[in-house]
Length: 80
Image (spheres, rainbow, N blue to C red):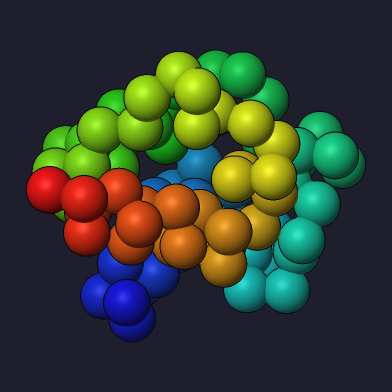
């Protein structure tokens, strides 16, 4: 899972280099990530990790932190 987490961290940092994504746990609730960021992130995760995130998985709980995103991507990649 460390590779997944590192890749997602790099993608998040590209979006907002000023945020400490390893500590932040309210990316959606604090409005750090907006809808455009989410769309970009989903596309980048698909490109970089070959994991498709379906619409039913696009909920704040899955995008509020690096850990929750990594967990989601790990679960989805294990389904394949």
